[in-house]
Length: 76
Image 1 (cartoon, rainbow, N blue to C red):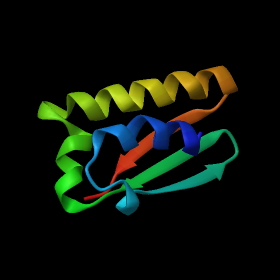
Image 2 (image 1 turned 30 degrees about the vertical axis):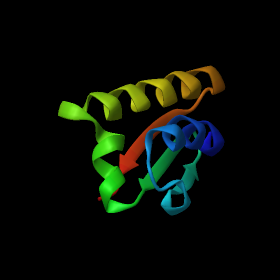
Image 3 (image 1 turned 45 degrees about the vertical axis):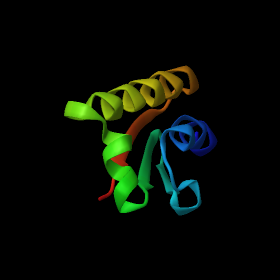
C-alpha cells in the first residue's frame, strides 16, 4: 500500500528525497500519512484539493480490492 502511494506521488514533486510516508495498520483500517518538502505540499494537494482527492480515490480503490479501509493524511 505504501509503495503504491509513493509511486503515485513521487513523479509529482521536485524533492522526492524529502518524501516521507508512514503507514499505520489497525485491523482493517490503514492510515497513510504523507509528509513532503514545504514547496511540494501544494503539488501533492493540487488546485482546490483535486489532486489530493484523486490520490485518496486511488488508494481507497486499492484498499477495497484488498478488503481494507484506507485513509490518506497529507501533513503540512
